[in-house]
Image 1 (cartoon, rainbow, N blue to C red):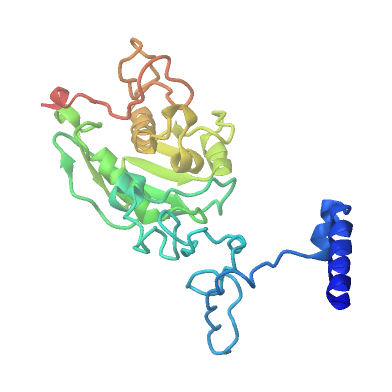
Image 2 (image 1 turned 180 degrees about the vertical axis):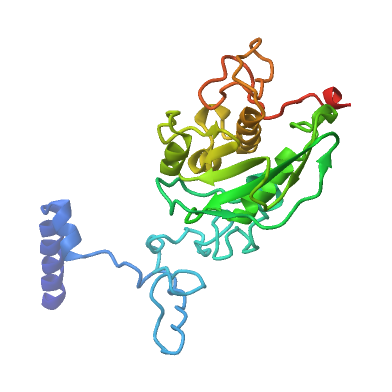
Length: 295
């Protein structure tokens, strides 16, 4: 009897002491259990070849979760692998499949999209070989030269020039002339791809400021930086700009001078200085943008 009475008095004293404590002291005296009373933690896969648990992120499985606490860092609450739908994998796409073929690979006019440069070697390589005769009328021959040390693939540039100059929407339209690429020194005109400082040298006394291209005599000198990146007001339409660049400078070698935008909203004439301004016209690279003009 005396033992029971003593035990009751002791329990009452403890309860009275607890009621008088701040809440934080409650917690310190009887800390809440974390994890031990919850569900068993998920098994952690062993790191390959070690027999030891893999570090978080090393395993392709789910991240471990302890008890009823929060999910491990970077692990979704549902326990799924963090590399999921919409997250590129090593294959470059959400499914791991190779990326689709780019426009640069499919379109000869968009190949070799490279970074801008300031200078190259100053020496040129004349591209070997001949093209078919394109168009009808008196034959105009041209050679393509690429400055050594430029990042572009010379073959890509040559193929693009052939495509542009042989198109009936260009200078062959209406039966005015035919064109053929040759690799001889006596070509009628020469199309050169050059670094900006070489353009400045070859275009003198014209002032190209390392930015624009030019025609000097029978040479159409193309600034590599403009070929690589175009100009801002073409709104990323590099294909149209490249067509314009070749046709404009070749037009100068044929004796054509600059003109202005005839009316806002119309296609800009190819001999307008579209690198500098559009004057309300729409970007255009063709001499005859309307196919009916060449019929």
